[in-house]
Length: 429
Image 1 (cartoon, rainbow, N blue to C red):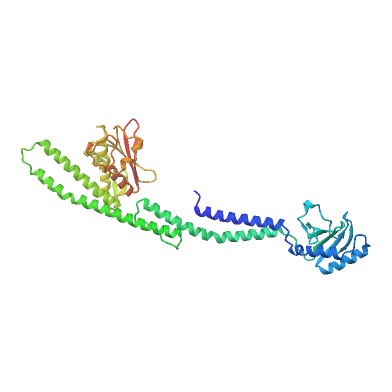
Image 2: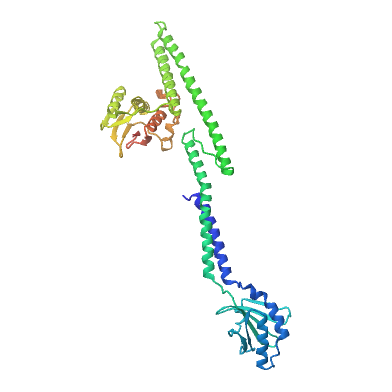
C-alpha cells in the first residue's frame, strides 16, 4: 500500500526535479552573456558610422577597427563577404555559421545591419553583417562561457536541499493522519475510549477534534445502552423468583404438563437474563479473564456427560477463566444438541500450532449454508426457517462463545463437516 506521505513527498520532489532539469536545460542552451547582447546595437551604429568602406586600404580598415575596439571591452575581427580575414584586434574570431546554426538573429537600429549570436571555442560571439557584405565579429574580453554541468550540479543540489527540507513537513502532516487512522481503527474494533491528540489548527486538527467529539458521544450512548440493558436484566431476576415461587404454590391438582411448560418458560427466561447480563459485562470490559491452568479435556468431559456427547482428544492445559470456559463449552454442546437433528454430538480437544488448544464440537444436522456461517455468531440471529423458541435457544449462545474465545486470545468459526453436518471450532491461547 502506498503511504500518503510518500505520495505527497514524491510529488513535491518530482516537481522540484522537473523544475531543476528545465532550468538546467535553459541555462545550457540559451545565451546568457547579456553584456554582449547589450552592446550589439552600439556596435551596429558605430560600425556603420566609423568604419571605412570595403574599398579602403586594409591598413585603414585595421586602424578603424583598433579605434572601435578602444570603445568596447571586446575582441574584434573583420572578415570579407567570403569569410576572408581583413583585420583583427585580439585573437581572430571564426566566421559566422549558417543562419540555422545561429542562436539569435536581430535587426539593428539602422535597419540595414543584421546580428547573429553563436558559440565559438572560447565563448559567445556576436556577428554583425555590414551592408557591403563584410562581417564584424566581437567577443567580450572576460566572457564566461556556458557551464551546463556546473549549473546542473548547482540546481541538483538546490533540489536535494528542498527535498530534505520538505520531508519533515510532509511527514509531520501524514503522521498525524496515521495516528487518526489508528484511533478510528481502534474505535471500530470496539475500543470506545480511543481518542487522538489534536495538534495544530489546520484541517487535520479540525478532523481530529470532530473525531474525538463523535467518539465521546458514541461511548456515552453505548455505555448508557449497556447499563440500561444490564439494569433491566438484573431487575428481571426478582419477578422470575416470584414466578418460581408461584409455580411451587400451585394447587396439587394442577396438570403436570402445565407445570412443565411454565417451568420450561421460566428456565428459558432465566437463561436469557443470565446470558444478557454476561454479554453486557463482556462488552463493557467488566469481566477480566482469570489466568489459571485449566485441563480443557477434563472440563469438556464433565459438560459432555450432561448431554450424552462423545469426547476425544488430547489432555491440553490452557490458561484462562474456568467459569467462562465452562460456559463456552456448555453453549457449544447445547447448540449442537439443539440443532443437530438428534444426531450424536462429538467433541474433540487438540493441541494448537504455536501453543494453546483447539476445541471442535460437531454434529450431523442439516448443516449451515456458507453465507450464514459468520452470522450465527451475531446476538439473537436465527437462521431462515427457524422459529422463535424452536429448540429452546435464546440466540446468545454462540455470540457468547465468540466473546469468551476472543477474551482468551482466540477465535471461533463455523465449518462444514465432511459427510454432512456442522463443526464449531474454537481456538484458545
